[in-house]
Length: 547
Image (cartoon, rainbow, N blue to C red; front, side, top):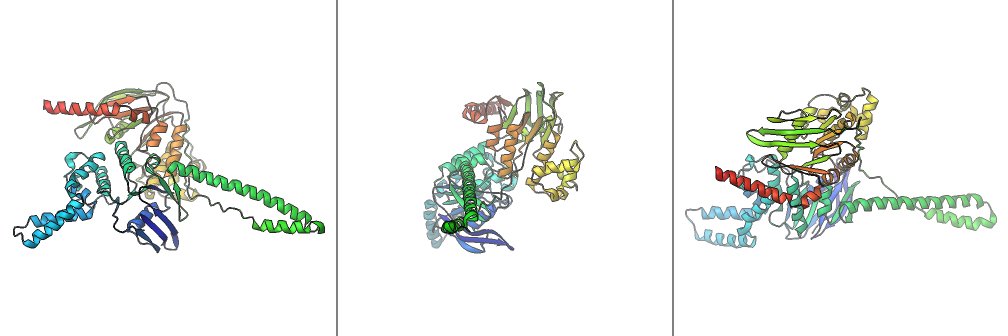
């Protein structure tokens, strides 16, 4: 168990947390939620001991081991992948290194033998003989190829490093597990594996995530941070949302009844306070009036943008035709003769772990990249709005937010443009901020404003939820559901894929395509994924045999 007792954290004069009391018990998974800036990551750092409290303390059951997901992706660049994962149990790792050093001695003394014997005993108690196989299981589950299990961390790409650090946090069955955005940079297969791992995990988990489906799947409780307090709910994210909305509704209804009663009492007192025969009743009602207290309903600190994509013209029957589209990147075949037609009512989710293939395809159909072979053709009634995965170049200038969006607006009017910015939580004074200095979430909201103002009837989105908070993701989800045009998109947010897409496409590692008219959950439930992996493995084996 881990608990916070009267915890207060002040940053300058501002209290980020004040007199927080909460217990996290064994066998439960707690989703820690709150608006951006509410202090979710900060609270995890307090629990893990990385950050000191102003007052109050954190208490952990004696003898329990705490593990947390580290965010420094370069900290272990000089270590092997396998060693980094085993460092998740630092004591076990230290024993392994001390043992190796003793056995490597040429002049092995009696004292060395006694010490080695002690270490071997503790090594066995910590399940040391299974350490590498357990670490490999975690790495395999997260999609790290066995060929790099003993590679040096600096040789891995960013996504692979994230997965290794996550495996490190999960290693060794920690008693308390703290995870800050564990699904970031994970493909949907890895997220699904992590969901199953946490569902089966028997100890205490506290997790921060913007993935609503993930929280609903793994959490038994929800801890809501708002206005420096933490309110605990028994249930997952959807249960919290319904409960919190119901609570506010009930408080408003109770206040309405109280206000009606107050008005009734005030009218009686006003009419009969001077009437001698009614004076006792008037006095009695004055006392009753004094006892009525309205519930203090604090508005949530959460803010939801308003995302509404309204196409200027209706889309025709001819949308997009793709013919034998082929592309290699750095000698690797990424797209292999893709051929398909997009229909006027399609909402297509591109899924699977081949991130490069999805981004390459989007870049080709938006004109940012040329194919090696094949062609594509947009229908004459279509207009496209594109959300790129990497928008660095888009904001590499000194324009203000207003001037930046004005450049894409068909109506060159400041009031018109600021209306779109206001919907995306950029009030009037924010319009003069330079786009260069915006946060990741602010840049995403700018790009979504650009897509809305274009009034296009085809939306192309490559991982739009990266950097967004839960409220913005919910608003985007609702906007995509309502959109009457065509959508081609990729997303790691399961709920967005499930509620938006009516057609699923997956580009396999060999560049081939699986194309199914179905929902995402139905696609996952089918045996298609198992079959395609069998086909892919068999084709690889055949190629190796031919070689």
